[in-house]
Image 1 (cartoon, rainbow, N blue to C red):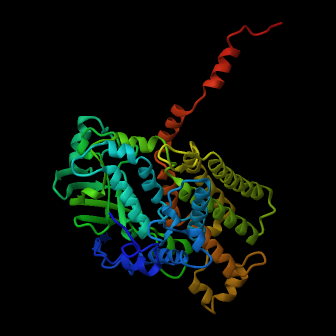
Image 2: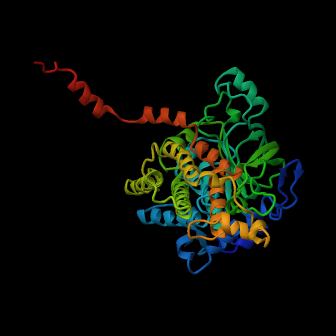
Length: 496
């Protein structure tokens, strides 16, 4: 694939992003086909909010923080796609991820900055991909070209890794599982001169309705398959013929005028993908029939989560802590010993995460693939799966029953109600508008459908926490300490 300044568009703009979504994609929501995702009430909020952030890439304030000059075309391209070859590059990528997450309050698990590390990880294993021979294409060359294409056009990708949740009692290697895969899991049904034909389903494709392309592969849970037809990794446009996108119930639509500042703008939507004889071109396939390179991707090299998720989690922690503090101040409980202790606990988690991020940067290393990787983050995804739920609970406890009852915007604007609201629903030194809107923000984080969706997402985002704990145990090197203990207990203990 040859790219130059005329065939590549560079860093995404808001207008270009909105226009890119009007491509005939097949999106279904609540039994109806969505005609235009940019104007549908359940999807337009997030689409236009992303457009706003995209536009920051061209501003004087953020241009150098969010883009770099492509050495191939001279275009400004998103730092999300920059291949990190030095510590300076890693620092640039950290700042870019901080901007994306500051702008979205740490609420987007699938911002346009998230999937670039996945593709960069595959790029880092390009030699292993090329070593798997196929007469129709070079998998390693495909990923190099695809990364270049994404970089020069600043594509917004999502991914779909898991099998449909039909019967998880069947194990990947046994006959029962093989029969189930034949029915529901995504697999190759035919090879053609143009590519492979795939059929089946994938979950959970967060942001699929508003993305440009979908990277389809296998999670660590499903990478070992009984049948090689189910081992594949590729990327295709969201409007690919035969791919159907089914949305979940929206959490962005609210009756009345209660106002949910996070839910209205950051419901990124989650989706099931149904494939019915979808053609995947040969140049879009990164692995086929062979699991070893994908296992290598999971096992080492690039830290696949990258700065994008780490910065998102930090911003989310900071937001919950600040909202809890402001609530405590607005109702006059900030001086209570138990409240102060709870806020201190939230700050502890937030600061520990910041220290861990700094540690990952301090222990960065050069991989065999020639890219700089952040250091090991073993245990961090487990840590946040545990602490996120705890921080939400602390926020609920500090807010008290005020989370349940607050006036709407129409209530605030009604002159007949207003005197009662001013008298009975104000806070300590703050007007009723300030207190009620602050509580609505807390409600979005801790009580609403949006907040609960966020919590489920955070728990499972890094994979099954129990599996991760077992993997951590198996990989954790304790030889030095266990050897010292063995030596200590090998001698008789002194006695009187």
